[in-house]
Length: 87
View 1 (tube, rainbow, N blue to C red):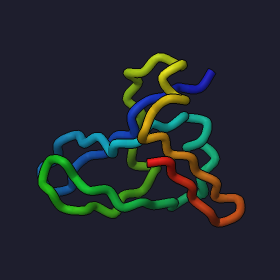
View 2 (cartoon, one colour):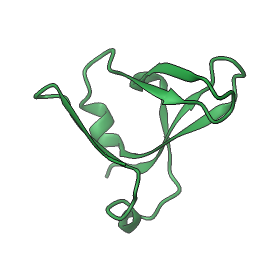
View 3 (cartoon, rainbow, N blue to C red):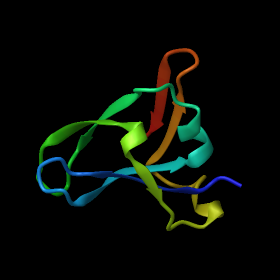
């Protein structure tokens, strides 16, 4: 069973944990190519960080039923070079 929760990263300036604002599934993250990146506005320092998905982790806080109703659901399709977000 895969985990679903908040995609977290570490602020490169302060070292504090930051919530990216996206809900993801661990099976989706596992399918990303090596080196896949995204830009995240840091809620800790206010800057934008260019982060690798591999450096992030999932903080599970949501029940499985919350996944489909989340306004920040991030769906990733790298097979066709596309990234679809529902934010």
